Length: 94
Image 1 (cartoon, rainbow, N blue to C red):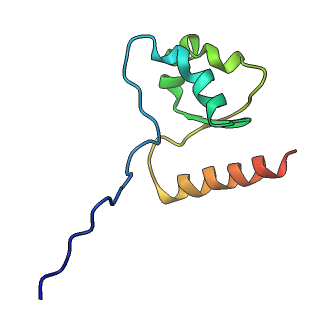
Image 2 (cartoon, one colour):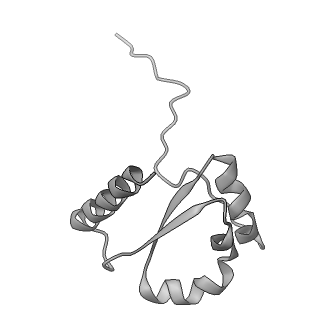
Image 3 (cartoon, rainbow, N blue to C red):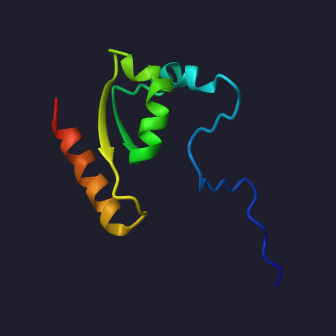
């Protein structure tokens, strides 16, 4: 018996949106608004944050509330739990 292949199956393993172009960072605020974002958690490292911060002008957008979390430096279940806890706390803030 021959099995049919599934067509149209979409598997998304990466970011929901990815833009790679010069000046792309200037589009972040509009992109967040297009998704209806009101509160955003920015997860960052130490060195990356220091280097990127001067270019992250969208963080000045007063229509979006930003929260910040410096991650532990490694991708781990413990770090994922910490971030999940932060998100739960964010959801409880009105």
